[in-house]
Image (cartoon, rainbow, N blue to C red; front, side):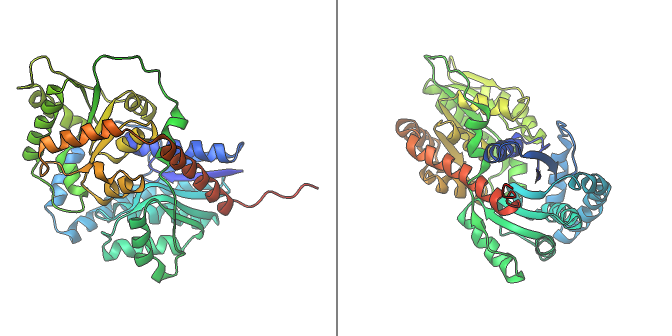
Length: 401
């Protein structure tokens, strides 16, 4: 048997790739011998670094009225998805079921995901396949057009299983989709929690200096996707410079990294001179080159003594490896994940929270560590959730004759 995973497999954001690889790992572990096909819902068929020009496009889109942004998305993205449809149709003819997930896929930023989900689930419906939605995040930011696209996509398929990754997402699903007759959603752990099992743990040599992984994201990109107002880019950069210098003064060796998006990598190039200027004497602040893949990113995160990040899956990977971490709020998915693993206390507000308070919170995170039995239970639940998905999606094996 063969199952298709519909996701962001070839995203330049390695957090998305980590989700896809961990979900495939979990599926193969749950049903040995099951074949897996990954289809990127953007239409990508291989990895590409991407273009930093996307940042300029986001900045322009933010200044346009919603109706015009949606019109542009329908024209540009719709044309791209139509070109991909024959490839999807051919690929889906070879599988026995299709799973949309994981990742934050039920969100509406200028119809981006509504158009993609409607297109790929339209192909799934045409193929007559059983379908599932699994471990997705759901935002309550849907436009009227976006809601119509999501509802049409989910009512058009034979939906055998639905699970979202947190209680907030489930509440939005119930509110937005159940009135259209779509089945209620259960809960499923983020597949990224299987990172340590999927990639293994790299060897760690004892070190005299504690190592901090500082994961930065471009403020403009954060503002485009944020649930609420965000600080000005200059203020955010200045605050992170002060935070890095505070950690350096405490003796940390700081490794600055991004999760691969071209705008985030460009921001690191832009921010590094400011991070180095005025740093305490003897400070060790280095920029990590873009990771070759999700496995390399996860392996590096596993070697840190502390991770401080805006990006969700830097924190998810840190939790999977038992690395203490501090996250910064910018949308509901950060809060939802931290709450789901009882670490809400270690989610902070960048810029508005004093640097000294974050440093104290980091001291506490390192002192208390990650509770190993609790983490083991979370990882076991993530594996069990995938097994339940496959039981509901795929036909039961024929009894022996």
